[in-house]
Image 1: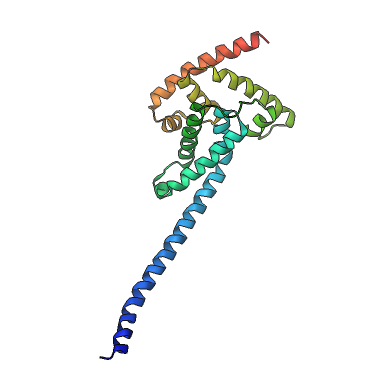
Image 2 (image 1 turned 120 degrees about the vertical axis):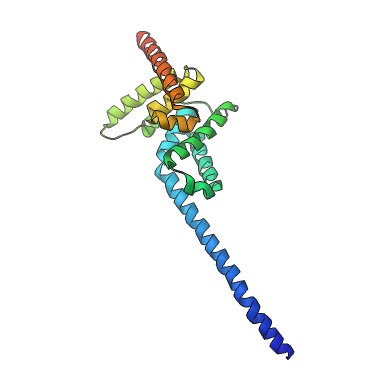
Length: 204
């Protein structure tokens, strides 16, 4: 067999295998891009909820926005497990919750704020006039101040229950505790909060 014949035979052997590698790489890139777009759409869907969680804990607009962005980056890093997640809303809240608690433990770089306009932005707005939203935001600020005075465990469940409207089962999933523990913490938190709010009203 001539040298050219050998070369042609080798080319015929290599090219199909090379094409398979290229096609596989293109398929993997397309699949990864589709995953990222799906996750980005998911984060966008719950962006307001995630921001509200972050702001309720950090009480600072810039820090809350940074926390949501960090949550998105973490979601991208764990995109391979996306298909195993049953409740995407709770999964995302748990991610941002862990981020904001970690930031809260660290030294504060920005002061907390009770900007009424910002509080109004993160509150549910359905059926409320501008004046009602402002009043609701002022009440929200007072409630948040009182919640900040609760013990840590009671404060956590109260934030997730009152502001994020999570069920006991969902709160248990976010905090990685039992549902009965959540219920007992909520019971104590509500009693303590009622006392604090009553005290606040009495001194106004």
